[in-house]
Image (cartoon, rainbow, N blue to C red):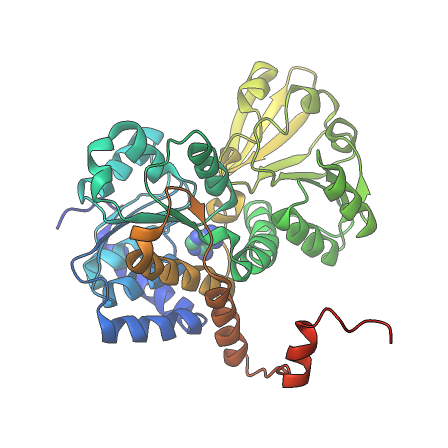
Length: 419
Ligand code: ADE
Protein backbone atom coordinates (compact mmCIF):
# COMPACT_ATOMS: atom_id res chain seq x y z
CA UNK A 1 0.00 0.00 0.00
CA UNK A 2 1.38 3.44 -1.00
CA UNK A 3 1.10 6.37 1.39
CA UNK A 4 2.99 9.50 2.40
CA UNK A 5 2.80 10.60 6.01
CA UNK A 6 5.19 12.14 8.52
CA UNK A 7 5.97 9.15 10.72
CA UNK A 8 4.19 5.81 11.13
CA UNK A 9 5.45 5.60 14.73
CA UNK A 10 3.00 8.35 15.67
CA UNK A 11 0.12 5.89 15.13
CA UNK A 12 -0.27 4.92 18.80
CA UNK A 13 -0.96 8.59 19.69
CA UNK A 14 -3.26 8.99 16.70
CA UNK A 15 -5.48 6.06 17.58
CA UNK A 16 -6.12 7.55 21.03
CA UNK A 17 -7.34 10.75 19.38
CA UNK A 18 -9.54 8.87 16.91
CA UNK A 19 -11.15 6.89 19.74
CA UNK A 20 -11.59 10.00 21.88
CA UNK A 21 -13.40 11.78 19.04
CA UNK A 22 -15.53 8.74 18.20
CA UNK A 23 -17.38 8.79 21.52
CA UNK A 24 -18.75 12.23 20.57
CA UNK A 25 -19.80 11.16 17.08
CA UNK A 26 -22.86 8.99 17.79
CA UNK A 27 -24.81 9.92 14.66
CA UNK A 28 -21.91 8.93 12.43
CA UNK A 29 -21.53 5.74 14.49
CA UNK A 30 -25.16 4.80 13.87
CA UNK A 31 -24.73 5.40 10.14
CA UNK A 32 -21.48 3.39 10.20
CA UNK A 33 -23.27 0.45 11.85
CA UNK A 34 -25.85 0.46 9.08
CA UNK A 35 -23.15 0.83 6.37
CA UNK A 36 -21.26 -2.12 7.83
CA UNK A 37 -24.33 -4.34 7.50
CA UNK A 38 -25.16 -3.27 3.96
CA UNK A 39 -21.63 -2.92 2.47
CA UNK A 40 -23.20 -0.48 0.03
CA UNK A 41 -19.86 0.94 -1.18
CA UNK A 42 -18.45 -2.40 -2.31
CA UNK A 43 -16.26 -1.86 -5.39
CA UNK A 44 -16.54 1.92 -4.95
CA UNK A 45 -13.44 4.07 -4.55
CA UNK A 46 -13.88 7.28 -2.59
CA UNK A 47 -11.17 9.89 -3.06
CA UNK A 48 -11.23 12.28 -0.14
CA UNK A 49 -9.48 15.63 0.20
CA UNK A 50 -10.39 16.69 3.76
CA UNK A 51 -8.61 18.09 6.80
CA UNK A 52 -6.87 15.04 8.22
CA UNK A 53 -8.17 15.12 11.80
CA UNK A 54 -9.49 12.61 14.32
CA UNK A 55 -13.04 13.44 13.20
CA UNK A 56 -12.22 12.90 9.53
CA UNK A 57 -10.62 9.59 10.50
CA UNK A 58 -13.96 8.45 11.93
CA UNK A 59 -15.69 9.34 8.67
CA UNK A 60 -13.09 7.43 6.65
CA UNK A 61 -13.51 4.39 8.92
CA UNK A 62 -17.31 4.52 8.56
CA UNK A 63 -17.04 4.58 4.76
CA UNK A 64 -14.51 1.76 4.79
CA UNK A 65 -16.86 -0.27 6.97
CA UNK A 66 -19.45 0.29 4.26
CA UNK A 67 -17.13 -1.52 1.86
CA UNK A 68 -15.49 1.50 0.20
CA UNK A 69 -11.95 1.65 -0.96
CA UNK A 70 -10.71 4.92 0.56
CA UNK A 71 -7.80 7.22 -0.29
CA UNK A 72 -7.28 10.42 1.68
CA UNK A 73 -5.21 13.56 1.28
CA UNK A 74 -5.23 16.87 3.14
CA UNK A 75 -7.40 19.80 2.09
CA UNK A 76 -4.88 22.29 3.46
CA UNK A 77 -1.09 22.06 3.80
CA UNK A 78 -1.18 22.99 7.48
CA UNK A 79 -4.25 21.21 8.86
CA UNK A 80 -3.06 17.60 9.14
CA UNK A 81 -2.75 15.79 12.47
CA UNK A 82 0.28 13.64 11.65
CA UNK A 83 -0.49 11.11 14.38
CA UNK A 84 -4.03 10.57 13.07
CA UNK A 85 -2.68 10.11 9.54
CA UNK A 86 -0.29 7.47 10.88
CA UNK A 87 -3.08 5.64 12.75
CA UNK A 88 -5.28 5.52 9.64
CA UNK A 89 -2.44 3.89 7.72
CA UNK A 90 -1.31 1.50 10.46
CA UNK A 91 -4.56 0.35 12.04
CA UNK A 92 -7.12 0.82 9.26
CA UNK A 93 -5.00 0.27 6.15
CA UNK A 94 -6.31 3.50 4.67
CA UNK A 95 -3.76 5.16 2.37
CA UNK A 96 -3.15 8.74 3.49
CA UNK A 97 -1.13 11.38 1.65
CA UNK A 98 -0.74 14.29 4.06
CA UNK A 99 2.00 15.85 6.14
CA UNK A 100 1.48 18.90 8.34
CA UNK A 101 3.50 21.81 6.92
CA UNK A 102 3.91 20.27 3.46
CA UNK A 103 4.83 22.66 0.63
CA UNK A 104 2.14 23.68 -1.86
CA UNK A 105 3.90 21.50 -4.43
CA UNK A 106 3.72 18.47 -2.15
CA UNK A 107 0.10 19.29 -1.28
CA UNK A 108 -0.82 19.22 -4.96
CA UNK A 109 1.17 16.03 -5.57
CA UNK A 110 -0.79 14.42 -2.70
CA UNK A 111 -4.05 15.36 -4.42
CA UNK A 112 -2.70 13.69 -7.54
CA UNK A 113 -1.94 10.57 -5.50
CA UNK A 114 -5.60 10.41 -4.49
CA UNK A 115 -6.65 10.84 -8.09
CA UNK A 116 -4.28 8.02 -9.09
CA UNK A 117 -6.73 5.72 -7.26
CA UNK A 118 -9.39 6.66 -9.86
CA UNK A 119 -12.23 7.63 -7.52
CA UNK A 120 -15.89 6.92 -8.28
CA UNK A 121 -16.93 9.50 -5.68
CA UNK A 122 -14.99 12.61 -4.64
CA UNK A 123 -15.17 14.15 -1.19
CA UNK A 124 -13.76 17.65 -1.06
CA UNK A 125 -13.23 20.48 1.40
CA UNK A 126 -12.47 23.59 -0.63
CA UNK A 127 -12.85 22.02 -4.11
CA UNK A 128 -9.14 21.52 -4.85
CA UNK A 129 -9.69 17.85 -5.71
CA UNK A 130 -12.54 18.54 -8.13
CA UNK A 131 -10.69 21.50 -9.57
CA UNK A 132 -7.57 19.37 -10.23
CA UNK A 133 -9.73 16.66 -11.84
CA UNK A 134 -11.32 19.19 -14.19
CA UNK A 135 -8.11 21.08 -14.93
CA UNK A 136 -5.59 18.33 -15.48
CA UNK A 137 -7.15 14.87 -15.26
CA UNK A 138 -10.26 15.18 -17.39
CA UNK A 139 -9.82 11.68 -18.79
CA UNK A 140 -10.83 10.29 -15.38
CA UNK A 141 -14.06 12.25 -15.07
CA UNK A 142 -16.13 9.66 -16.94
CA UNK A 143 -15.67 7.29 -14.01
CA UNK A 144 -16.83 9.79 -11.37
CA UNK A 145 -20.45 9.39 -10.28
CA UNK A 146 -20.48 12.55 -8.19
CA UNK A 147 -18.83 14.39 -5.35
CA UNK A 148 -19.50 16.07 -2.04
CA UNK A 149 -18.28 19.45 -0.83
CA UNK A 150 -17.77 20.32 2.81
CA UNK A 151 -17.24 24.06 2.96
CA UNK A 152 -18.68 27.42 1.87
CA UNK A 153 -15.59 28.35 -0.18
CA UNK A 154 -15.74 25.05 -2.06
CA UNK A 155 -19.45 25.45 -2.75
CA UNK A 156 -18.81 28.97 -4.13
CA UNK A 157 -16.08 27.65 -6.44
CA UNK A 158 -18.20 24.72 -7.63
CA UNK A 159 -21.21 26.94 -8.26
CA UNK A 160 -19.10 29.18 -10.48
CA UNK A 161 -17.90 26.08 -12.36
CA UNK A 162 -21.52 25.00 -12.82
CA UNK A 163 -22.50 28.50 -13.95
CA UNK A 164 -19.85 28.35 -16.67
CA UNK A 165 -21.11 24.83 -17.54
CA UNK A 166 -17.67 23.47 -16.67
CA UNK A 167 -18.77 21.14 -13.87
CA UNK A 168 -18.87 17.63 -15.29
CA UNK A 169 -20.55 15.65 -12.48
CA UNK A 170 -23.10 16.38 -9.76
CA UNK A 171 -21.99 17.72 -6.40
CA UNK A 172 -23.79 17.54 -3.08
CA UNK A 173 -23.11 20.70 -1.10
CA UNK A 174 -22.89 19.14 2.35
CA UNK A 175 -22.09 22.62 3.65
CA UNK A 176 -25.61 23.74 2.79
CA UNK A 177 -27.45 21.24 4.98
CA UNK A 178 -28.83 23.03 8.02
CA UNK A 179 -27.34 20.35 10.29
CA UNK A 180 -23.97 21.38 8.88
CA UNK A 181 -23.74 25.16 8.63
CA UNK A 182 -25.87 26.09 11.64
CA UNK A 183 -23.60 24.06 13.91
CA UNK A 184 -20.19 23.45 12.30
CA UNK A 185 -19.80 26.91 10.72
CA UNK A 186 -21.23 28.73 13.74
CA UNK A 187 -20.38 26.86 16.94
CA UNK A 188 -17.47 24.91 15.47
CA UNK A 189 -15.69 27.91 13.96
CA UNK A 190 -16.60 30.06 16.95
CA UNK A 191 -14.85 27.76 19.38
CA UNK A 192 -11.99 26.38 17.28
CA UNK A 193 -10.88 29.80 15.99
CA UNK A 194 -10.53 31.19 19.50
CA UNK A 195 -8.88 27.93 20.51
CA UNK A 196 -6.30 28.37 17.73
CA UNK A 197 -5.59 32.03 18.54
CA UNK A 198 -5.23 31.26 22.23
CA UNK A 199 -3.04 28.16 21.76
CA UNK A 200 -0.74 30.13 19.44
CA UNK A 201 -0.45 33.27 21.55
CA UNK A 202 -1.55 32.52 25.16
CA UNK A 203 -3.15 35.99 25.06
CA UNK A 204 -6.07 37.20 27.15
CA UNK A 205 -9.22 37.83 25.13
CA UNK A 206 -11.10 39.70 27.90
CA UNK A 207 -10.97 43.46 27.47
CA UNK A 208 -9.41 43.27 24.00
CA UNK A 209 -10.77 44.86 20.85
CA UNK A 210 -11.47 41.94 18.55
CA UNK A 211 -12.19 42.74 14.91
CA UNK A 212 -14.00 40.11 12.84
CA UNK A 213 -14.18 40.48 9.07
CA UNK A 214 -17.33 38.78 7.78
CA UNK A 215 -20.63 38.16 9.51
CA UNK A 216 -21.69 34.91 7.86
CA UNK A 217 -22.31 31.85 10.04
CA UNK A 218 -18.60 31.56 10.88
CA UNK A 219 -18.29 35.24 11.76
CA UNK A 220 -21.46 35.07 13.86
CA UNK A 221 -20.13 32.13 15.82
CA UNK A 222 -16.77 33.75 16.38
CA UNK A 223 -18.35 37.05 17.48
CA UNK A 224 -20.67 35.23 19.88
CA UNK A 225 -17.85 33.30 21.51
CA UNK A 226 -15.32 36.18 21.61
CA UNK A 227 -17.98 38.34 23.26
CA UNK A 228 -18.54 35.54 25.74
CA UNK A 229 -14.89 35.78 26.69
CA UNK A 230 -15.18 39.51 27.31
CA UNK A 231 -13.86 40.98 24.07
CA UNK A 232 -15.14 44.21 22.62
CA UNK A 233 -16.22 43.15 19.12
CA UNK A 234 -16.12 45.12 15.88
CA UNK A 235 -17.61 43.58 12.74
CA UNK A 236 -16.59 44.59 9.23
CA UNK A 237 -18.88 43.66 6.34
CA UNK A 238 -19.56 44.39 2.68
CA UNK A 239 -23.15 43.14 2.80
CA UNK A 240 -25.64 45.71 4.13
CA UNK A 241 -28.08 43.11 5.53
CA UNK A 242 -25.35 41.24 7.40
CA UNK A 243 -23.94 44.53 8.68
CA UNK A 244 -27.40 45.45 10.03
CA UNK A 245 -27.73 42.03 11.59
CA UNK A 246 -24.38 42.53 13.36
CA UNK A 247 -25.47 45.95 14.55
CA UNK A 248 -28.73 44.63 15.99
CA UNK A 249 -26.89 41.70 17.56
CA UNK A 250 -25.18 44.44 19.56
CA UNK A 251 -21.82 44.76 17.81
CA UNK A 252 -20.02 47.84 16.49
CA UNK A 253 -19.79 47.85 12.69
CA UNK A 254 -17.36 49.94 10.65
CA UNK A 255 -14.97 49.76 7.68
CA UNK A 256 -11.81 47.70 8.14
CA UNK A 257 -9.41 50.65 7.88
CA UNK A 258 -11.09 52.30 10.88
CA UNK A 259 -11.58 49.06 12.84
CA UNK A 260 -7.92 48.12 12.39
CA UNK A 261 -6.78 51.26 14.18
CA UNK A 262 -8.38 49.95 17.39
CA UNK A 263 -7.73 46.23 16.92
CA UNK A 264 -5.82 44.04 19.35
CA UNK A 265 -6.93 41.06 17.25
CA UNK A 266 -8.17 40.88 13.66
CA UNK A 267 -9.58 37.62 12.34
CA UNK A 268 -10.89 37.20 8.81
CA UNK A 269 -13.74 34.79 8.02
CA UNK A 270 -15.03 36.08 4.71
CA UNK A 271 -13.99 33.52 2.07
CA UNK A 272 -12.72 36.46 0.02
CA UNK A 273 -9.31 37.78 -0.90
CA UNK A 274 -7.19 40.70 0.47
CA UNK A 275 -9.62 41.60 3.22
CA UNK A 276 -6.73 42.75 5.39
CA UNK A 277 -4.74 44.71 2.82
CA UNK A 278 -2.30 47.56 2.17
CA UNK A 279 -4.87 50.08 3.38
CA UNK A 280 -5.39 48.11 6.61
CA UNK A 281 -1.64 48.00 7.27
CA UNK A 282 -1.51 51.81 7.13
CA UNK A 283 -3.95 52.21 10.01
CA UNK A 284 -3.45 48.98 11.95
CA UNK A 285 -2.78 49.27 15.67
CA UNK A 286 0.76 48.57 16.81
CA UNK A 287 1.00 45.04 18.23
CA UNK A 288 -2.14 43.71 16.52
CA UNK A 289 -2.46 39.93 16.15
CA UNK A 290 -3.82 39.05 12.72
CA UNK A 291 -5.24 35.68 11.77
CA UNK A 292 -7.58 34.05 9.27
CA UNK A 293 -10.18 31.33 9.75
CA UNK A 294 -11.46 31.27 6.17
CA UNK A 295 -10.58 28.31 3.95
CA UNK A 296 -7.75 29.79 1.86
CA UNK A 297 -4.71 31.83 2.90
CA UNK A 298 -5.70 34.77 0.72
CA UNK A 299 -7.70 36.88 3.17
CA UNK A 300 -4.60 38.60 4.57
CA UNK A 301 -2.62 40.22 1.75
CA UNK A 302 0.83 38.94 2.72
CA UNK A 303 2.59 40.17 -0.46
CA UNK A 304 1.36 43.72 0.36
CA UNK A 305 2.59 43.26 3.93
CA UNK A 306 5.95 42.02 2.69
CA UNK A 307 6.42 45.22 0.68
CA UNK A 308 6.18 47.43 3.77
CA UNK A 309 8.11 45.10 6.09
CA UNK A 310 11.62 45.89 7.33
CA UNK A 311 12.28 42.60 9.13
CA UNK A 312 10.33 39.51 10.12
CA UNK A 313 10.99 36.74 12.55
CA UNK A 314 9.24 33.56 13.79
CA UNK A 315 8.78 34.17 17.52
CA UNK A 316 7.15 30.88 18.45
CA UNK A 317 5.20 28.13 16.67
CA UNK A 318 2.76 29.73 14.20
CA UNK A 319 3.53 33.31 15.32
CA UNK A 320 5.50 35.51 12.94
CA UNK A 321 6.46 39.04 13.93
CA UNK A 322 6.54 41.65 11.17
CA UNK A 323 8.43 44.89 11.89
CA UNK A 324 7.10 47.43 9.44
CA UNK A 325 8.98 50.29 7.80
CA UNK A 326 6.57 52.70 9.52
CA UNK A 327 7.84 51.52 12.92
CA UNK A 328 4.82 49.35 13.84
CA UNK A 329 4.97 45.67 14.74
CA UNK A 330 2.23 43.18 13.89
CA UNK A 331 1.95 39.42 14.32
CA UNK A 332 0.59 37.00 11.72
CA UNK A 333 -0.63 33.60 12.87
CA UNK A 334 -0.03 30.42 10.84
CA UNK A 335 1.14 32.38 7.79
CA UNK A 336 -2.47 33.40 7.17
CA UNK A 337 -3.68 29.80 6.88
CA UNK A 338 -6.81 28.74 8.75
CA UNK A 339 -5.92 29.36 12.36
CA UNK A 340 -8.40 26.88 13.85
CA UNK A 341 -6.85 23.87 12.12
CA UNK A 342 -3.26 25.13 11.97
CA UNK A 343 -2.89 26.18 15.60
CA UNK A 344 -5.62 24.01 17.16
CA UNK A 345 -7.41 20.82 16.14
CA UNK A 346 -10.38 22.23 14.21
CA UNK A 347 -13.99 21.93 15.25
CA UNK A 348 -14.93 19.62 18.11
CA UNK A 349 -16.24 16.15 17.36
CA UNK A 350 -19.76 17.00 18.57
CA UNK A 351 -20.36 19.27 15.56
CA UNK A 352 -18.24 17.31 13.10
CA UNK A 353 -20.56 14.39 13.95
CA UNK A 354 -23.37 16.14 12.08
CA UNK A 355 -21.15 17.47 9.27
CA UNK A 356 -19.76 14.02 8.62
CA UNK A 357 -23.13 12.29 8.99
CA UNK A 358 -24.12 14.57 6.10
CA UNK A 359 -20.98 13.53 4.18
CA UNK A 360 -21.73 9.84 4.72
CA UNK A 361 -25.38 10.16 3.70
CA UNK A 362 -24.38 12.34 0.73
CA UNK A 363 -22.05 9.60 -0.51
CA UNK A 364 -24.92 7.11 -0.30
CA UNK A 365 -27.26 9.60 -1.98
CA UNK A 366 -24.84 9.97 -4.92
CA UNK A 367 -24.54 6.23 -5.26
CA UNK A 368 -28.31 5.84 -5.46
CA UNK A 369 -29.19 8.93 -7.47
CA UNK A 370 -26.26 9.98 -9.64
CA UNK A 371 -27.98 8.96 -12.87
CA UNK A 372 -30.80 11.41 -12.21
CA UNK A 373 -28.74 14.31 -10.92
CA UNK A 374 -27.76 17.18 -13.21
CA UNK A 375 -24.15 18.34 -13.41
CA UNK A 376 -24.77 21.03 -10.87
CA UNK A 377 -24.50 21.75 -7.15
CA UNK A 378 -27.32 20.10 -5.18
CA UNK A 379 -28.30 19.91 -1.53
CA UNK A 380 -29.30 16.82 0.41
CA UNK A 381 -33.07 16.30 0.73
CA UNK A 382 -34.52 17.97 3.82
CA UNK A 383 -35.66 14.56 5.07
CA UNK A 384 -32.04 13.45 5.53
CA UNK A 385 -31.09 16.75 7.19
CA UNK A 386 -34.01 16.26 9.62
CA UNK A 387 -33.01 12.65 10.23
CA UNK A 388 -29.53 13.77 11.31
CA UNK A 389 -31.01 16.36 13.69
CA UNK A 390 -33.39 13.76 15.15
CA UNK A 391 -30.57 11.30 15.76
CA UNK A 392 -28.46 14.02 17.37
CA UNK A 393 -31.32 15.13 19.62
CA UNK A 394 -31.97 11.53 20.61
CA UNK A 395 -28.34 11.20 21.57
CA UNK A 396 -28.60 14.30 23.77
CA UNK A 397 -31.51 12.51 25.48
CA UNK A 398 -33.94 15.17 24.27
CA UNK A 399 -37.54 14.70 23.23
CA UNK A 400 -39.59 17.20 21.26
CA UNK A 401 -43.30 17.60 20.49
CA UNK A 402 -45.01 16.22 17.39
CA UNK A 403 -47.61 18.01 15.31
CA UNK A 404 -51.16 16.81 16.09
CA UNK A 405 -53.33 15.86 13.11
CA UNK A 406 -55.33 19.05 13.75
CA UNK A 407 -52.13 21.11 13.52
CA UNK A 408 -50.96 19.31 10.37
CA UNK A 409 -54.31 20.04 8.74
CA UNK A 410 -54.17 23.69 9.86
CA UNK A 411 -50.71 24.18 8.35
CA UNK A 412 -52.09 23.12 4.95
CA UNK A 413 -55.29 25.15 5.13
CA UNK A 414 -55.28 28.60 3.50
CA UNK A 415 -59.03 29.26 4.00
CA UNK A 416 -58.79 29.64 7.78
CA UNK A 417 -57.93 33.22 8.74
CA UNK A 418 -59.80 35.83 10.79
CA UNK A 419 -63.21 34.42 11.62
N1 ADE B 1 -13.08 21.45 9.55
C1 ADE B 1 -13.12 22.15 10.69
N2 ADE B 1 -12.86 21.38 11.75
C2 ADE B 1 -12.63 20.13 11.29
C3 ADE B 1 -12.31 18.91 11.91
N3 ADE B 1 -12.19 18.80 13.22
N4 ADE B 1 -12.15 17.84 11.11
C4 ADE B 1 -12.29 17.96 9.78
N5 ADE B 1 -12.60 19.08 9.13
C5 ADE B 1 -12.77 20.17 9.89
